Length: 488
Ligand code: BES
Ligand code: MN
Ligand code: ZN
Image (tube, rainbow, N blue to C red; front, side, top):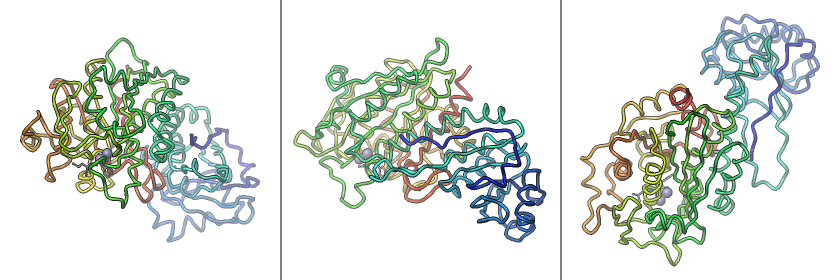
């Protein structure tokens, strides 16, 4: 898997500034005042830094922005990256500063002169998150991503503070790799194997195969995978870092490829449906992050892994299937398959684990992209308390999320003439009727939220924290929500 750039934390040794051959990073306050490290860079470069700090270009930069001065005289460096940042920045600004550095970073080693600037750990987090590229499918060996040397007056403190965010960044990378992977590589079997390998990190991982799913009565989930030769699976990952209390449950839609089934999607853009396992990818990334940072919480992650193909045994429009819960569903459109997968996994999660709360993630509807675009995920919840907790965490992590409504008023759109419900509610409020459908498989008293991430899981242009492609959206927010609310 793609691993984040490695960090080395060292005491400040300004004599190395002149001879560092990669890029050098220094921080300058909006006032233009130079700290000790910047003064060294300025002296070596014969006043270049001071001239830049006094320039209109610097004045026009916003906080956390960076700019590279190429091939400075008097230094061996290929460039000096100058970041505009307060001495004691807000956490979010420090993270953004890191992102700005990450964007400018080339393949050579990076020397970050952090001195005694506040929030250096968040700067590292930003760098780690942004320096990502998916090269698994390139035949050429990936280029070295030069490491990062961070010099600070208290390097051990920075190293300690950066440990957890860097573990989370590794979880984010796992999610991105999974979500970027093509469907002939990331089959249901390969996906399950990658999750099973996480036992080495201290997670318990259980893979439920088709015969067991059959026995459990997961007919809505199985109906999605039966047109594919890839076996359907449910993977259960448990992290037991807390006491004896019931776990929090995360549930993910893991459609490794969504052709639409017999309700076939048009050819244009169908290749994007390799990311239709994005929800399962986020759940997997969060579980990895929790294990890596040894979270003091009990969390169970469940993913439903299926492939939606129009093979000879595929579900027909009009078929009626019985869910594990016992409710019957008339499948009008085989392309509304994510809700069928989640229905059974949500029900199973509640029956088996009696969780204290449950959040599911899914690239569920194109309609949420019409509503919110690629900036925010839709949050549907039966609990103000849980959705407030999630929204706060998402805001703190700068991951876009917006509450959307649920209401029984929409239920009439799901009425079926032959079964308990149908799987589509027509065009109006397509994302809400999908949420209403899921809610039928959630116990009334269960605090639950559904995150529709169709617009944010993978995008066609760079975002703040990631190059184009899979973003890993949600890993950081969920990790923080757990850290802030479910750790003793
Ligand atoms: N996986 C899609 C939703 C999707 C669309 C994700 C675009 C990412 C980008 C989902 O399974 C789907 O096909 N939904 C249908 C539902 C409809 C048939 C009710 C949709 O949104 O068109
Ligand atoms: Mn679909
Ligand atoms: Zn889908």
